[in-house]
Structures are given as C-alpha cells and as structure tokens.
Length: 495
Image (tube, rainbow, N blue to C red; front, top):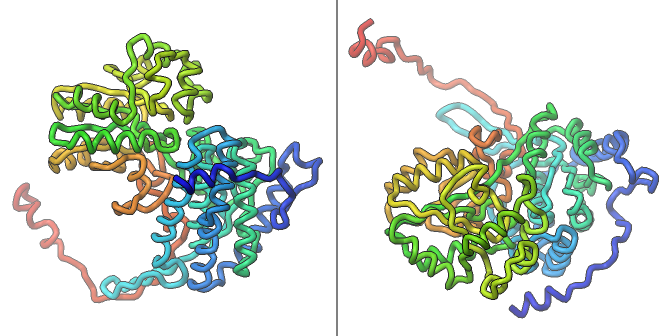
C-alpha cells in the first residue's frame, strides 16, 4: 500500500512541446488535413523501411525498450494519473497494476517469439515460413485504456518490424501523446527510427481517423462498435474487436467463497472499465441465496426493486450508457442515481436481481459499471439457454464463464455457446485477456469471430501484425487413389 500512496503524489506537469514528436502549426490544429496525415504516413514509411532491416536481436531490444518505458514506476504513475484526469474513467491503483501486468505479460509472450526472417521449417511439408512486415499500422485506441492498449499495440507492431500511427480517443489524446513522447525517447536511446511511432495531432475527429485508415497498410480497431465498423468499411485490411457482455454460470459444485472473491475482484477492477468484466451471473439452484451473502461479504449490496428502477433510469439515456456513471466509483453512481441508503454509499459494487433479457431489461446488457445482474435458474440446462439469450442480445462471440467442478458442463458451453473464450473458475476480467496462470496471449483486444462480426476469433497478438511468405519445396508424392478415398462411402451408399 505504501507504493500506491507514493503514486498518488505524482505531479503532472503542464503539456510541453516534445523534442521528439513532430508537431503541426497552430493554424493546422483546428483540422487534421489530408496533407498532415500523408506527411505522418510518409515519415512512418521511411522509418519502417530502415527498421525492417533490423536483426531479431535488435528488434527484441527495441520491444524491450518500449516495455521498460512503461514499467518504470515514475512513468507508469504519471501516465496512469493523466489517464484518470483526462478520461475520468477507472481507478488509479488499478490502472497502474493493469499497465504493469499487461506489459510484463506481453513482453514474456514476445521474448522468445520469432518475428524476423525464417520463423518455421517443416521437412514433412517442405515449407519454410518467413516473417514479413505489414508496413504501417493505423491503431484506434479507446478512452478506457489510453495507456495499456496503445502500449500493447506498439509492442506487437514493432515486434514484427512495422511502424504505427495511433488515433486515440479525444479524451485520451493528451495521455497518449505523453506516452508516445516517452516511447520515441526510448527508440532514440536504442538507435531506432523515432518515426516508427507517431500519433494523430489534435483535434481527433472521425474524418481524420478515416483519412488515416485510407493510407495505412493495416487497421487495428478497438473501442466503440462504430470505430470497428468504420475500420471494416475503410477498404484497408482491418482487425476489429467485438462488444463484451459477459455472463457467468455458477454451478452447485463450485466453492462459493472462492467464486464470490473472484467475481468481486474482477467486477471492481479499474471500476469495471474492462469489457471482460462479469455483467451477469447465472446462479443455479441453492447457490443463489448463499452466493448473494458471499458477495455481500465482499462489498456488494443488493438493491431493492425501487432502487433498481432509480438506477435503471440513470444508467441509460435513450438506450445509451450514461457517461456520468460508466467506470465510476459507487459513490458517484449513488450521487447520479439518487441512491441514499447508507449501505449503498459504502458499497464496492451493486447487485441487481433480474429475470428478463433484451431491450426491455437493460440490465441484461453491457453496463461498463460497478453493477452486476443476478439471475436464478433451477438447473444447468436452463442456465445454458439463458446465457445463449443474453449473448444473442449483446456480446455474441466475446466470452462467457463458469465456476464448476464438472468438466462436462465446461465442454458443453464450448460446444454450444457462440463465444470464442470460455473462462473456467477464474476472475473473468483478469483471465480473458491473458494471465500468468492461463495460456491465453496477453492482450486488451479480444476478437469475437464471425459471431461478433470480427475478422479474428482469438486474442489479438503479434502474429496478426505480420505477413508470412512460404517457400515451398517438393516432397515425396502423396496422391491417393479414388478407391482409397471413396471406399467407405461407396460401401455405404453404392456408386
């Protein structure tokens, strides 16, 4: 706790012109013109042409320098505090923890990975695989993670010998600009081209971001659904991520004390900024009353029907989440929703009993806030059907979770539910983007497959930032006869 206390005393200096970031004239700041963006791209291409000749050893040194830039406590503290001040989203201590863990985890994933030259050889197929850069990447980043997400993208991008231009959310621009300034200093230190990393100048607009997408070689889009759809419509190869709305089943075989602890940890982390945080808990049978008690021991408070109505009226405005409540502490939620009960004022998160799914039951959707919907069902079959309905409403393709000792239940979810990840007996928010105790790649961007309208079905990782050339040699002929291929079919159905 001493470290956190010291972090809170970090002073943020006023914005200063960077020695390393290319700036635009004051007259240009009202509008990011096509020429401004073309100039960014030209500088990026020149830098990338030089960088693609680096050896694997030098590339890994560059990636390590980027990671160390954020891992340095003074940088992490400064940027985390800027992120909170600029966006108003999340919790300072958790931002610091997230930046640290995600960066350390990703560096671990990248350290032994091959991304330069020959990366695989297979004598059986006669194929040699060679990693090649994609070129210049345009990266759209969200306000929920204005430090961790661009850092993850930059590290993956540079690992594969690319250049990158960031288009942050308007609220996250000052933080992202400072981050890029620090990254460019790190590039200068290791004698890499500083224009490998650039950022769109203010003001960030849809027009400027669209112009960027037209001129890069690959677009990586995170954040709002509109950003992802715009990336796919740009005509440039694009990778987008889907919308979360995580439902988690709690089976009667689960250790409910452990479940409550993990759910509370996950739900409250960074004030629920993560799309991987639990949104709905589906409780089977007698687990219902017991788990509610356990969640209350962890700091949750169950709202009355009247309090639920108050919150519902404030959490959504014309069907859109109220930004005054999103990723805010419970005290702020109480202020906006006029929840005056003393217990609620000191709660860590809020519990809502829900029965329906769909637009008429908005708590069944993504909330991005310290609010958790609870459903009570009699058996596992009903739980599976309910999870399906919740995801059909919002969140198809993203993920679901289960707390159980029954592996058959786990397998059934994997076979039946339209998600790319089923998280088992874990704090969902921490596990879904990769953790030190599971095998998922560390990321802040989760592909949702065709279910979620995405081009990838897995956690975004470094291989999505590379092209692969295959050298193909001959191998011993392997040509089966028609008899071999059709024998069983003809035996059953005839010729």
